[in-house]
Image (tube, rainbow, N blue to C red; front, side):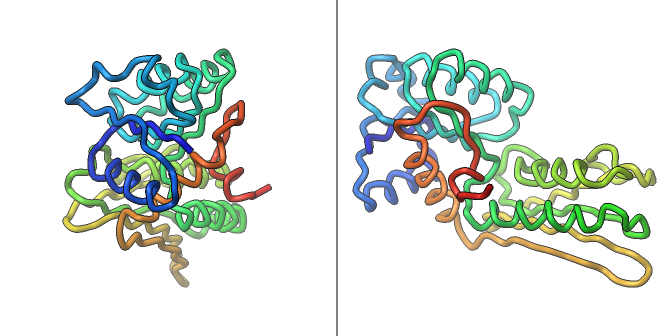
Length: 239
């Protein structure tokens, strides 16, 4: 598989290392230092693009890949307001698009557990629930995209929670996401249901960035040659 990398920071370099070890070829690397390389002609060399940049640049990067007619995997977070536009543009251009707030296989299994637990707790109004996420100080968005995904999954199951908030309030309708930034911390996400009787917690802790990189490569392998909009649930084979 021929891969174009959009974003060549720590994650981009790790994806390159792991992709090459799996026998894939990196045919293009685009960063802030060589934006002139981001052309349709250059991207025609690739089977799939993997994009890890910033919330401000992500939509335009994804759109350019679709203009070039290549499948694109995006791991940039903080641009949910343009996500539906990206999905529609993918269909219009008849290419492939997969976005995830977190490509770690473990985190995506954690997502499925979170949804099942929230469904079990949907009638247990004696419990309150909150989310805590911890990341390194270079993390650009707070709360993390992963924490927002977790919160949206919970909100879809608990009718007594109406919205997530990043500052704690006294309203029982608010789902509080507590964000901490400390080094080194690749990523920890904790969900806690609390009552006067007991607590229920589930937690995922990343030990390093390798899980994110390997998941992104697995997503790229999955969508290469396909058409349409996909999620990590299809990559994992979750029905």
